[in-house]
Image (cartoon, rainbow, N blue to C red; front, side, top):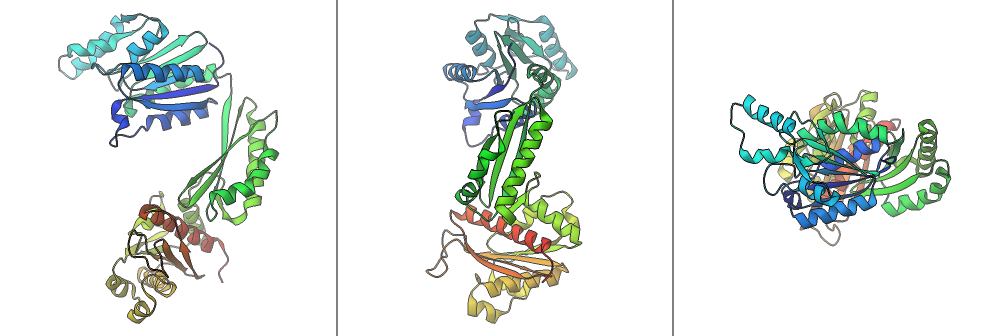
Length: 421
């Protein structure tokens, strides 16, 4: 078997092709493979159809040194992964008495008879090495074929993850020749994808060279742009040095729109800044309906820097709970800078926080006007420093709300890092 540098992942199961089940195994495997210095060339999801499954696995083997499948190892007729792989590799199936004994013992411990169909799980391609599964009845399989490797893993994460870490990862590490894949991520808020790329592109050629080729990728989500720098090899200190240098160059070029180059999320960065000051934040939300406070409190330990919040969707709640003056609402409308400032002041004062943050806007799809179209959002932060911004965000309701929350957190971050005005 040659040195393993590339992998393909095939998630098997017709349920994964519906809206009701998500493939999380591929994310887990991609992360673990990257840690071992093995790059993922392709991922695929395929249903429980013999011809489709064979075609997808064949394509994965044409691309990668190692192919890992997940799912399709159960006892029923639609669990086809073992048989399909055996056919592709030209290997006969054989029943392993030792595997059958383990499956029977599992049912005996539960004091129930083993269904006859579970006997199928003891049938494996000739020459395959069985991987023990203490959390289920389906053993995994390690199959070396020529200079390639095929690994079959069960679908349930509680079975797959310990099996990979215990049996698969050590073998892959030995076969990877000491390679490691390293990554740096620079996270940006406040610029579009094209703006970030325009600034970053001239720097890409300065980062890698023949000794350490560096791959660059830009990813965009509502309110956040990520620049990924990736390199693989055996000289880990040299790789780390090149990636660190590249990350520093990008941060210097992009400036204060960079909020993280160490893996932290935007809310974690904002929380750390608040905690360093000894401040607590309170949130008043209208169009985001609690999403801001939810994201802030997703951070473990956020109780030290989050006081609480108020969802003030109706104007009456803005008046009664936050003390927004009625005449200000009448004069400027709910989506306005004076109202956002009043909301931020109100939630800060009522909850005894150091910083108040407020969001009010028109998330759509209705409610927009010529002067305040859908996507208009006003964000205010009050405290040692007061800032208010009127912004416009594109997209549907969920995108407008996501952009709004990210912008509010970033404004809290900036206020917490800046010296008080």
